Length: 236
Image (tube, rainbow, N blue to C red; front, top):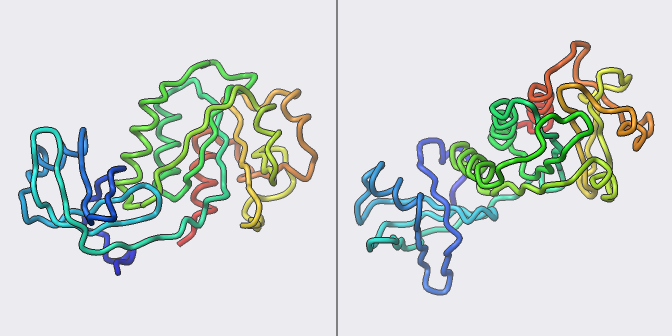
């Protein structure tokens, strides 16, 4: 069985084509290209693969064709997602690089559920879903995690508050501190971040005073608030 400490020097690949009956895994597309062309792996090499659902497979490279590669499973280790009920609700930001940076770092720290929404004060109104999916996949592999993050797109904040669970609204004017929060793992926890101009008054009306929390006495950029919250929640 593998553990987190033993994974520090490995390369991690992703595949959805796991055949447990025959103990084989098929690797295709960009993962195949990186494995063979960039890393120049050959038959007989040890390859680590995740299904993005918590399983890590230690395999051996058996054979390759033009468009796919087959590995044989040696061992399987299943990990637990400690943050499966945590949802980061991030608005579209004016600067896409900052938005993507916040998303990437949150994944590296352990967040696996994201809801992307258009806030009242969002300047940017659309998102490239394919690009975001590539970013979270890359961040998952880089940080050697085994849960492929889920990205849900929501039209607005009103759609998010219809969900059942606890809401934690990051707001500079709040009295309660986020560091004092104790998450109830049996409930979904939604952490809501505002855009560059902050939440609109009409959006704040969705919540009670008990839902507001602050990270710092300083005014933080949206992406800083996202990463800081992930750092605070995802302790070792």
